[in-house]
Image (cartoon, rainbow, N blue to C red; front, side, top):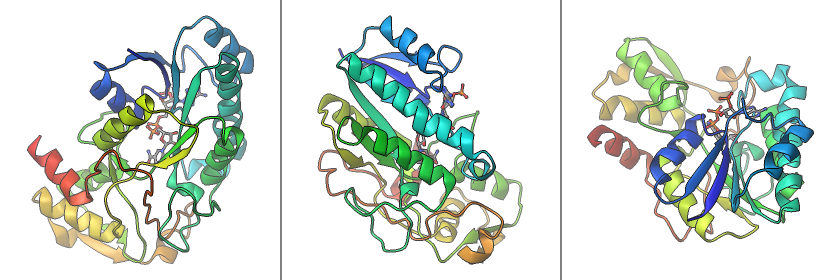
Length: 276
Ligand SMILES: NC(=O)c1ccc[n+]([C@@H]2O[C@H](COP(=O)([O-])OP(=O)(O)OC[C@H]3O[C@@H](n4cnc5c(N)ncnc54)[C@H](OP(=O)(O)O)[C@@H]3O)[C@@H](O)[C@H]2O)c1
Protein backbone atom coordinates (compact mmCIF):
# COMPACT_ATOMS: atom_id res chain seq x y z
CA UNK A 1 0.00 0.00 0.00
CA UNK A 2 1.20 3.51 -0.79
CA UNK A 3 2.21 5.57 2.23
CA UNK A 4 0.82 9.08 1.83
CA UNK A 5 1.66 12.09 3.99
CA UNK A 6 -1.25 14.55 4.09
CA UNK A 7 -1.22 18.21 5.09
CA UNK A 8 -4.56 19.93 5.61
CA UNK A 9 -5.92 16.62 6.90
CA UNK A 10 -8.19 18.40 9.39
CA UNK A 11 -9.75 20.54 6.64
CA UNK A 12 -13.00 20.32 4.69
CA UNK A 13 -11.55 18.34 1.79
CA UNK A 14 -8.59 16.52 3.35
CA UNK A 15 -10.53 14.99 6.21
CA UNK A 16 -13.05 13.42 3.81
CA UNK A 17 -10.30 12.00 1.58
CA UNK A 18 -8.85 10.24 4.59
CA UNK A 19 -12.27 8.99 5.71
CA UNK A 20 -13.06 7.52 2.29
CA UNK A 21 -9.69 6.17 1.19
CA UNK A 22 -8.27 5.10 4.55
CA UNK A 23 -8.45 1.41 3.63
CA UNK A 24 -6.60 1.82 0.35
CA UNK A 25 -3.67 3.99 1.39
CA UNK A 26 -1.65 4.34 4.57
CA UNK A 27 -2.22 7.98 5.45
CA UNK A 28 0.18 9.87 7.69
CA UNK A 29 -1.65 13.10 8.60
CA UNK A 30 0.66 16.00 9.41
CA UNK A 31 -1.31 18.38 11.59
CA UNK A 32 -0.40 22.01 12.01
CA UNK A 33 0.56 21.08 15.57
CA UNK A 34 3.17 18.68 14.07
CA UNK A 35 4.44 20.92 11.31
CA UNK A 36 4.20 24.57 10.36
CA UNK A 37 4.70 24.43 6.63
CA UNK A 38 5.93 28.05 6.61
CA UNK A 39 8.92 27.04 8.76
CA UNK A 40 11.53 25.60 6.43
CA UNK A 41 13.64 23.98 9.16
CA UNK A 42 10.57 22.42 10.70
CA UNK A 43 9.54 20.97 7.32
CA UNK A 44 13.00 19.54 6.59
CA UNK A 45 13.42 18.12 10.09
CA UNK A 46 9.99 16.48 10.09
CA UNK A 47 10.23 15.02 6.59
CA UNK A 48 13.76 13.75 7.14
CA UNK A 49 12.45 11.34 9.72
CA UNK A 50 9.40 10.12 7.82
CA UNK A 51 9.12 7.30 5.30
CA UNK A 52 6.53 7.84 2.59
CA UNK A 53 5.84 7.34 -1.13
CA UNK A 54 3.65 10.35 -1.85
CA UNK A 55 2.95 13.75 -0.29
CA UNK A 56 -0.60 15.07 -0.64
CA UNK A 57 -0.48 18.79 0.07
CA UNK A 58 -3.85 20.35 0.90
CA UNK A 59 -2.83 22.75 3.69
CA UNK A 60 -3.45 26.32 2.65
CA UNK A 61 -4.53 29.75 3.75
CA UNK A 62 -8.09 29.41 2.39
CA UNK A 63 -9.90 32.53 3.60
CA UNK A 64 -10.59 34.30 0.30
CA UNK A 65 -11.82 37.58 1.81
CA UNK A 66 -9.27 37.46 4.66
CA UNK A 67 -6.41 37.14 2.16
CA UNK A 68 -7.02 40.70 0.93
CA UNK A 69 -6.07 42.02 4.40
CA UNK A 70 -3.55 39.27 5.19
CA UNK A 71 -1.69 39.22 1.91
CA UNK A 72 1.67 38.33 3.46
CA UNK A 73 0.26 35.40 5.37
CA UNK A 74 -1.58 34.07 2.30
CA UNK A 75 1.67 34.11 0.29
CA UNK A 76 3.69 32.74 3.19
CA UNK A 77 1.45 29.68 3.51
CA UNK A 78 0.39 29.12 -0.10
CA UNK A 79 3.63 29.99 -1.87
CA UNK A 80 6.53 29.70 0.62
CA UNK A 81 4.94 26.78 2.49
CA UNK A 82 4.48 24.93 -0.78
CA UNK A 83 8.10 25.59 -1.76
CA UNK A 84 9.36 24.31 1.60
CA UNK A 85 7.42 21.11 1.10
CA UNK A 86 8.45 20.70 -2.52
CA UNK A 87 12.15 21.11 -1.76
CA UNK A 88 12.07 18.54 1.03
CA UNK A 89 9.89 16.05 -0.90
CA UNK A 90 11.94 16.24 -4.09
CA UNK A 91 15.19 15.97 -2.11
CA UNK A 92 13.86 12.63 -0.90
CA UNK A 93 12.91 11.78 -4.52
CA UNK A 94 9.27 11.34 -3.61
CA UNK A 95 6.06 12.39 -5.36
CA UNK A 96 4.02 15.47 -4.56
CA UNK A 97 0.39 16.38 -5.29
CA UNK A 98 -0.67 20.01 -4.74
CA UNK A 99 -4.37 20.81 -4.45
CA UNK A 100 -5.17 24.08 -6.18
CA UNK A 101 -8.24 26.06 -7.14
CA UNK A 102 -10.32 27.47 -9.99
CA UNK A 103 -9.52 30.90 -8.49
CA UNK A 104 -6.28 30.89 -10.53
CA UNK A 105 -8.53 31.91 -13.47
CA UNK A 106 -10.14 35.30 -14.07
CA UNK A 107 -13.57 33.89 -15.00
CA UNK A 108 -13.82 36.03 -18.14
CA UNK A 109 -13.78 33.60 -21.10
CA UNK A 110 -15.20 30.25 -20.05
CA UNK A 111 -14.86 27.32 -20.12
CA UNK A 112 -11.57 26.81 -18.30
CA UNK A 113 -9.59 23.66 -19.00
CA UNK A 114 -6.27 22.46 -17.58
CA UNK A 115 -4.35 24.42 -20.23
CA UNK A 116 -6.43 27.61 -20.17
CA UNK A 117 -4.74 30.91 -19.41
CA UNK A 118 -4.36 31.60 -15.69
CA UNK A 119 -4.95 35.15 -14.45
CA UNK A 120 -6.11 35.39 -10.83
CA UNK A 121 -8.19 38.37 -9.70
CA UNK A 122 -7.89 37.91 -5.91
CA UNK A 123 -4.98 37.68 -3.49
CA UNK A 124 -5.99 34.13 -2.56
CA UNK A 125 -6.01 33.15 -6.25
CA UNK A 126 -2.64 34.83 -6.80
CA UNK A 127 -1.07 33.09 -3.83
CA UNK A 128 -2.36 29.66 -4.91
CA UNK A 129 -1.07 30.31 -8.44
CA UNK A 130 2.35 31.19 -7.01
CA UNK A 131 2.23 27.80 -5.26
CA UNK A 132 1.49 26.19 -8.64
CA UNK A 133 4.38 28.04 -10.31
CA UNK A 134 6.81 26.85 -7.65
CA UNK A 135 6.21 23.24 -8.57
CA UNK A 136 5.06 23.32 -12.20
CA UNK A 137 6.53 20.35 -14.07
CA UNK A 138 7.95 18.88 -10.87
CA UNK A 139 4.77 17.76 -9.15
CA UNK A 140 1.10 17.06 -9.87
CA UNK A 141 -1.32 19.99 -9.62
CA UNK A 142 -4.99 19.14 -9.05
CA UNK A 143 -7.44 22.03 -9.30
CA UNK A 144 -10.79 21.66 -7.58
CA UNK A 145 -13.73 24.07 -7.39
CA UNK A 146 -16.53 24.79 -4.91
CA UNK A 147 -16.22 21.55 -2.93
CA UNK A 148 -19.18 20.41 -0.80
CA UNK A 149 -19.97 17.42 1.38
CA UNK A 150 -22.79 16.07 3.49
CA UNK A 151 -21.46 16.80 6.96
CA UNK A 152 -18.45 18.51 8.55
CA UNK A 153 -18.81 20.35 11.82
CA UNK A 154 -15.68 22.47 11.57
CA UNK A 155 -16.34 24.39 8.35
CA UNK A 156 -19.45 25.04 6.28
CA UNK A 157 -19.23 24.78 2.51
CA UNK A 158 -21.67 26.86 0.46
CA UNK A 159 -24.29 24.09 0.25
CA UNK A 160 -24.52 23.62 4.01
CA UNK A 161 -24.39 27.40 4.54
CA UNK A 162 -27.40 27.86 2.24
CA UNK A 163 -29.24 24.93 3.83
CA UNK A 164 -28.76 26.30 7.34
CA UNK A 165 -30.00 29.78 6.38
CA UNK A 166 -33.04 28.36 4.60
CA UNK A 167 -33.81 26.09 7.56
CA UNK A 168 -33.74 29.20 9.74
CA UNK A 169 -36.11 30.78 7.19
CA UNK A 170 -33.66 33.60 6.50
CA UNK A 171 -33.76 35.53 3.22
CA UNK A 172 -30.60 35.34 1.16
CA UNK A 173 -29.22 36.94 -1.97
CA UNK A 174 -27.38 34.78 -4.46
CA UNK A 175 -25.62 35.89 -7.63
CA UNK A 176 -27.59 35.16 -10.79
CA UNK A 177 -25.17 36.41 -13.48
CA UNK A 178 -22.16 34.27 -12.66
CA UNK A 179 -21.19 30.59 -12.89
CA UNK A 180 -19.71 28.16 -10.41
CA UNK A 181 -18.82 24.51 -10.81
CA UNK A 182 -19.70 22.75 -7.55
CA UNK A 183 -17.83 19.53 -6.85
CA UNK A 184 -18.93 16.72 -4.55
CA UNK A 185 -15.98 16.00 -2.26
CA UNK A 186 -16.53 12.23 -2.31
CA UNK A 187 -15.94 12.35 -6.08
CA UNK A 188 -12.77 14.38 -5.53
CA UNK A 189 -11.52 11.63 -3.21
CA UNK A 190 -12.25 8.81 -5.69
CA UNK A 191 -10.76 10.69 -8.63
CA UNK A 192 -7.69 11.45 -6.54
CA UNK A 193 -7.35 7.78 -5.73
CA UNK A 194 -6.80 7.16 -9.44
CA UNK A 195 -4.34 10.04 -9.69
CA UNK A 196 -2.37 8.89 -6.65
CA UNK A 197 -2.09 5.43 -8.23
CA UNK A 198 -1.28 6.81 -11.69
CA UNK A 199 1.00 9.70 -10.85
CA UNK A 200 2.37 12.15 -13.44
CA UNK A 201 3.80 15.66 -13.09
CA UNK A 202 0.84 17.33 -14.79
CA UNK A 203 -2.13 19.60 -14.13
CA UNK A 204 -5.57 18.01 -13.69
CA UNK A 205 -9.02 19.49 -13.13
CA UNK A 206 -11.21 17.42 -10.82
CA UNK A 207 -14.50 19.27 -11.03
CA UNK A 208 -18.20 18.54 -10.81
CA UNK A 209 -20.23 17.84 -13.96
CA UNK A 210 -21.64 21.19 -15.06
CA UNK A 211 -21.62 24.87 -14.13
CA UNK A 212 -24.61 26.89 -12.93
CA UNK A 213 -25.23 30.24 -11.26
CA UNK A 214 -25.08 30.44 -7.45
CA UNK A 215 -28.74 31.56 -7.62
CA UNK A 216 -29.73 28.43 -9.56
CA UNK A 217 -27.57 26.33 -7.22
CA UNK A 218 -29.32 27.80 -4.16
CA UNK A 219 -32.74 27.10 -5.66
CA UNK A 220 -31.71 23.54 -6.37
CA UNK A 221 -30.56 23.06 -2.76
CA UNK A 222 -33.94 24.39 -1.57
CA UNK A 223 -35.90 22.14 -3.94
CA UNK A 224 -34.00 18.96 -3.18
CA UNK A 225 -33.99 19.41 0.59
CA UNK A 226 -37.64 20.54 0.74
CA UNK A 227 -36.89 24.13 1.77
CA UNK A 228 -38.44 27.41 0.70
CA UNK A 229 -37.06 28.48 -2.70
CA UNK A 230 -38.65 31.93 -2.53
CA UNK A 231 -36.34 32.99 0.31
CA UNK A 232 -33.56 33.22 -2.29
CA UNK A 233 -33.31 36.51 -4.20
CA UNK A 234 -31.14 37.13 -7.26
CA UNK A 235 -28.37 39.69 -6.99
CA UNK A 236 -25.92 40.94 -9.64
CA UNK A 237 -22.25 39.87 -9.47
CA UNK A 238 -21.04 43.50 -9.40
CA UNK A 239 -23.37 44.36 -6.55
CA UNK A 240 -22.63 41.26 -4.44
CA UNK A 241 -18.85 41.58 -4.61
CA UNK A 242 -18.72 45.35 -4.01
CA UNK A 243 -17.17 44.89 -0.57
CA UNK A 244 -15.69 41.41 -0.92
CA UNK A 245 -12.74 39.83 -2.67
CA UNK A 246 -13.64 39.19 -6.30
CA UNK A 247 -14.37 35.62 -7.36
CA UNK A 248 -14.05 34.59 -11.02
CA UNK A 249 -17.39 35.58 -12.56
CA UNK A 250 -17.87 32.75 -15.05
CA UNK A 251 -16.14 29.84 -13.38
CA UNK A 252 -17.18 27.07 -15.74
CA UNK A 253 -14.43 24.57 -15.02
CA UNK A 254 -13.93 21.52 -17.22
CA UNK A 255 -11.40 18.79 -17.71
CA UNK A 256 -9.83 17.45 -20.88
CA UNK A 257 -7.95 14.85 -18.89
CA UNK A 258 -10.40 13.28 -16.50
CA UNK A 259 -11.27 10.19 -18.52
CA UNK A 260 -11.02 7.95 -15.46
CA UNK A 261 -13.76 9.00 -13.02
CA UNK A 262 -17.26 10.26 -13.75
CA UNK A 263 -17.96 13.32 -11.59
CA UNK A 264 -21.52 13.96 -10.46
CA UNK A 265 -23.53 16.96 -11.59
CA UNK A 266 -24.65 19.29 -8.79
CA UNK A 267 -28.13 17.78 -8.85
CA UNK A 268 -26.73 14.24 -8.64
CA UNK A 269 -24.46 15.24 -5.75
CA UNK A 270 -27.34 16.74 -3.78
CA UNK A 271 -29.57 13.73 -4.48
CA UNK A 272 -26.78 11.46 -3.31
CA UNK A 273 -26.45 13.49 -0.09
CA UNK A 274 -30.20 13.26 0.46
CA UNK A 275 -30.24 9.48 0.05
CA UNK A 276 -27.08 8.65 1.99
N1 LIG B 1 -12.78 24.96 0.21
C1 LIG B 1 -12.82 25.43 -1.03
O1 LIG B 1 -13.80 26.08 -1.42
C2 LIG B 1 -11.67 25.15 -2.00
C3 LIG B 1 -11.87 25.41 -3.36
C4 LIG B 1 -10.84 25.16 -4.26
C5 LIG B 1 -9.61 24.69 -3.79
N2 LIG B 1 -9.43 24.48 -2.46
C6 LIG B 1 -8.11 24.02 -2.00
O2 LIG B 1 -8.29 22.75 -1.41
C7 LIG B 1 -7.38 22.60 -0.31
C8 LIG B 1 -8.15 22.20 0.92
O3 LIG B 1 -9.10 23.22 1.23
P1 LIG B 1 -10.07 23.10 2.49
O4 LIG B 1 -11.25 23.94 2.21
O5 LIG B 1 -10.23 21.65 2.84
O6 LIG B 1 -9.19 23.81 3.60
P2 LIG B 1 -9.59 24.20 5.10
O7 LIG B 1 -10.81 23.45 5.53
O8 LIG B 1 -9.58 25.67 5.21
O9 LIG B 1 -8.36 23.64 5.90
C9 LIG B 1 -7.06 24.15 5.70
C10 LIG B 1 -6.07 23.17 6.28
O10 LIG B 1 -4.75 23.71 6.14
C11 LIG B 1 -4.07 23.61 7.38
N3 LIG B 1 -3.08 24.68 7.50
C12 LIG B 1 -3.29 26.01 7.32
N4 LIG B 1 -2.13 26.68 7.52
C13 LIG B 1 -1.18 25.74 7.83
C14 LIG B 1 0.21 25.81 8.14
N5 LIG B 1 0.86 26.99 8.20
N6 LIG B 1 0.89 24.66 8.41
C15 LIG B 1 0.23 23.47 8.37
N7 LIG B 1 -1.07 23.33 8.07
C16 LIG B 1 -1.78 24.46 7.82
C17 LIG B 1 -5.19 23.73 8.42
O11 LIG B 1 -4.76 23.20 9.64
P3 LIG B 1 -5.55 23.60 11.00
O12 LIG B 1 -6.85 22.88 10.95
O13 LIG B 1 -4.66 23.10 12.08
O14 LIG B 1 -5.67 25.11 10.99
C18 LIG B 1 -6.31 22.90 7.76
O15 LIG B 1 -6.11 21.51 7.98
C19 LIG B 1 -6.63 23.93 -0.18
O16 LIG B 1 -5.37 23.80 -0.77
C20 LIG B 1 -7.50 24.92 -0.95
O17 LIG B 1 -6.73 25.96 -1.49
C21 LIG B 1 -10.44 24.68 -1.55
